[in-house]
Image 1 (tube, rainbow, N blue to C red):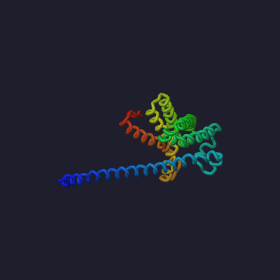
Image 2 (cartoon, helix red, strand yellow):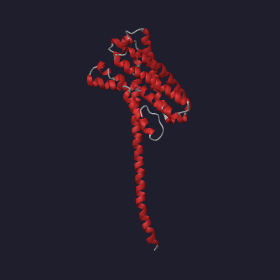
Image 3 (cartoon, rainbow, N blue to C red):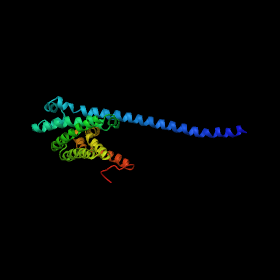
Image 4 (cartoon, rainbow, N blue to C red):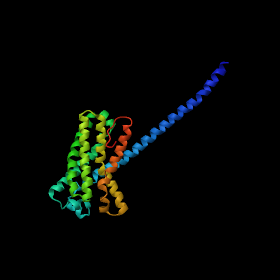
Length: 248
């Protein structure tokens, strides 16, 4: 009689064990795929960072006149400009590159938790680089290759870059960490316009075969999609907690 009581109990456990095992396997696969996609994404971003940071090094290693004579379109635009414009151009290259190189460190949650002092020191360097590099970028927007379109697109990019960084600083000084992170994500989107500009430019040159026609699109195309993506991410997060968004 005891056998008849225990046997159904053992049989009834089997579906529960199977369900639990299936859930564990599914969770493992989801985590594996998530980590795999994160690694691939980090690798792609890393390659883009290296390309965006080291591509402008040519302007520091060679005179603009020499680069212009070799057919470099950007150097051709700035080489005949007044000396102060050339100095502003080099300032923008150095400081925008600094912000580009250090910004990924600021987004690392693990680094913030383990080394908060590094996060604060690096953040100050990035903010100074953005303030000076953004001001230089705004001045250069009046001398850019794309003309009036470039003045509007790159000028607005520089203004928003500095503004978002300033709002992020103000938020953290007030102790508003959620708003600080939201504004710094927007700042990151503006910083990486240097990366997406080059990606779009390469794609458009391949498509059209002409540098100047392609360059007319990148003053806005380099940063508007970046900001849209960040706003969508922030809007999704705002469903769970109060995150300030630019629209809505």
